[in-house]
Structure formats: structure tokens, C-alpha cells
Image (cartoon, rainbow, N blue to C red; front, side, top):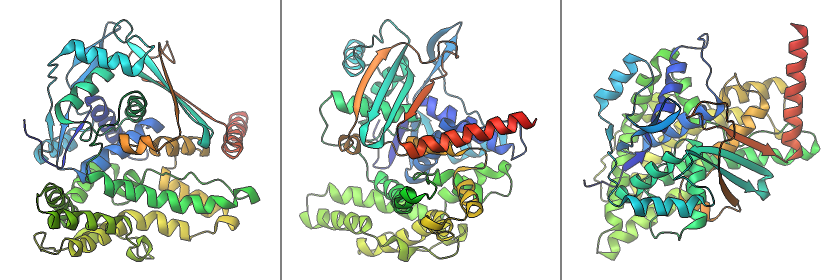
Length: 435
């Protein structure tokens, strides 16, 4: 099978978790379901992949049967109306396992997760310590997860594998620490999505310089894609139609076509053509974000722009597509940031901003965990620049959980984060006592 520049591969597990989250959101605010924070992160990464790639291929998923983990199919787990729209859009296709050399595959996974024994134990736990973040994460994975990821990478290349479930980001980091860094590690579509997240993180971090003076800590990486879609939903039931409307907007379609053209230019034997693409991306990385963002929140209509994607001026196209897209995704959180100053934050305005950015069902401690998950790099190149210590072991975090629970444990050593969590605990105790 031939893969195009904007083709991506995600795991069936990530697809099922993300669409499960969509199903909960479709029930609306008053619905009985609740999205776990890891599921929210999975959905945010899923939306990012959906918006900035053309075709998405799905691996098969591990299934549990009588306590055993076996290969299974991949199912859409949201509501039926949304599933019909997703099917009609023809974005997703299956990527059957190839397993051209099963023993070589098993040996490679052994090397990555050692001293864990994936051939003999159905689960392993990744431990990632980030000293500069005062953070430790333990993430349980099914051994079959690793085999399916590696089989997909063997088929399409590591750059086209997009981690969506946070455990997959951690697996990629572990993999990078134990194997040589390949020449190609990411696709051009990631440069846009990475830039968007970095812009928000940069703004938030600047506000946090006042934490030492008593200002509240602001988690730096909100789920910008989920919150953006929800802002344009009338009810949760229209989540999928709204998401597809964003994806099919003129600005996003032109951007994806532009990325494909730039990818082709990078492979052109003519140095002048390659230089055009390189300069275009350098200009995007230096794009003045604040100038592209309105003071009021941009609506979906800002993405309806008319552009001739086959204009000769590649850099000119960049300016035309980047501005409305950056405006759309960043105007909401940026306008919220403008509502308060970091050292004089009105608690009510701050709570409203965090609720709009993270969702109103998460406390501060959970928001910090969401932020930590969404900060995890999504490619080997970015992981190579992260100060992290890695280990892996056979076993489970919670032996009582279901076979495919993929539990996690996160430990913060930052006193500011700890104080937020203690405050959450005290609030919960007070609410419980009042009942």
C-alpha cells in the first residue's frame, strides 16, 4: 500500500477510547457519563490528528476474553448518528497486521521494554521520571499494544504513527531512549499542531511566574481542541457534525493541501523548490501569533476563506491559511487569558477560564494531570530533547482493574501542584461532611 504525505496511523485502542469520550459528550452536560482525564487527553489528541491529516489508518485492537488478551476488531463507540457521519466521511481505514517477521518483531519489543517480559506476561508498566518537571508517571500497557504499534511502524514508518492515547506517547519516549534515532521522525502536519500547543503553553507559563508571589498555578496545556469543538456545539449531540465542519472548512482543507505540496517540494531534486518549502516552514514557526488573533473570540466562520492553493508563492499561501486557523484555535484561550493578570487574578474569572479551557468537571489537581499528559511529545525528535529517565517492568498498576484498563499513576513533587491537590482534597472532605 502506498502512503501519502498526510496519511497517519493510530491504534484501534485510541480510536475506541476517543469515540467513547465522544459518546459521553453527546449525552450533554446532564448526561450520566463522565470522561476520565486520560480519556479527555486521548480525545484531544484524536481531534488534532483528525484535523491535520487526510487519511487515518487504524490498527486492530486488543480484546479481553475470559481474562485473556486476544487480537480483535476496532469499533466506533460513540452514538449511531455520529458513526454514520464518520463512516460517510471515509477518513478511516483499517490497517491489518502484517507481521512479516514475527520473531524479529518480538525481539525488537523485548529490547524496548526490558527487563519486562512481554512474551510471558500480558502487561508491562512504563515509568517516566522528568526531573525538571518534578514529575513521575507510571503507565500500564498491554503487551499486545507494543506489538501492534511496532507492526504499524514497520508498515508505514515511525513518522506516520501518531500517538493518541497518552500511554502511546510514553511508549514512544521509552522506544526512543533504547533504540537509535531514525532519520525521519515526524511529518509536516505535526508542525502546525505542535505550534498551536506551544503557543498556549508559552502564554500560560508567563503567567505562572507570579506563583511565587501567591498567584494561583495555571496548568499550562489545556485540551484546546476539545474545548474549541464544544464551544461551537449547540448541544453535545452535535459534537461530530461540528468536528467534521471544522475539518472540512476551507482553511483546514487548504492547509492540508498546502502541507502536501510542501512535502512534495521537499523531495524535489531542484534545490530552489526545496528551499521554498523550508523557508515557508521557518516563517510559520516565526509567525506572529498575537497579530493573528482577534481580541474577541473567533467563530467557525473565520475558517471560511477562499484561497488558490496552487499559487506559486508558497510563503504567501502560508500567511493566508495560518492566520484564520491560529485565530480560530487560539482566540478563545487567549481572550480568556486577557481577562486577568497573573499576579492579580480574580478567583471567579480564573475559575471561569479554567472551566472553559479544561471542562467544569475537573478539579485543579486533575487539570494539572491533564496538562502533564498533553505536554508529552508526540514524536521521537521532540522526545530526544526531553530530560527523562526511563524504566519498564512486567506487571500491573492495579491488578483488580479490568484486563484492558491501562491504569496510570502520576506523582508531582512541585510544591505548587501539591498545594492545589491538598486544596482539592480539603474541598472534597468539606463537601462530603456537609452531605
